[in-house]
Length: 171
Image 1 (tube, rainbow, N blue to C red):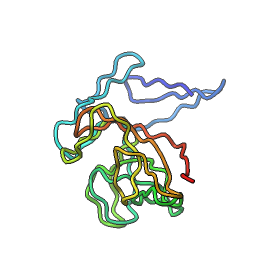
Image 2 (cartoon, helix red, strand yellow; image 1 turned 90 degrees about the horizontal axis):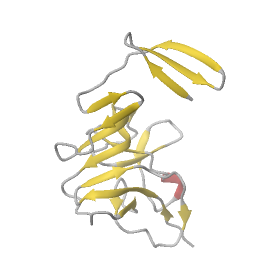
Image 3 (tube, rainbow, N blue to C red; image 1 turned 45 degrees about the vertical axis):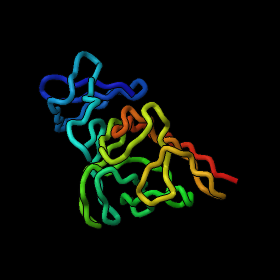
Image 4 (spheres, rainbow, N blue to C red; image 1 turned 90 degrees about the vertical axis):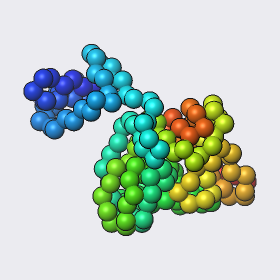
């Protein structure tokens, strides 16, 4: 899949040898710079509990807070993830908003997220946690816990969120 956007906002996607033209609304904020085929995202969110990067709009299945790690349940809603069991995994996004159950909000799929209360060791891997909706700097070790790397710490309070959907279950 390749794509191009012209000045009128039309996007042409090429899938294999066929071109599909669709008119879509495109929103570009000042935190992104587009030059040729490169999109440069702001990698340093300006405030705690904010994220910068690729986001999607979705519906919360339960109450969520900014930085909660979430998975998509069979109802297509976002629920707090937990490494205690594979049924609440894999983490696919971080909540960007405070949401009540059934509310629509923003979810970070890839990018940087800042939470000044985290306290990571810079450069360390970040994993799914056994605490619902949380992340951890240590790989879960309990029997039947799921291990999923979701990013790497840039600073003590900032994560480069890039979840791997591959998981390993502890024996």
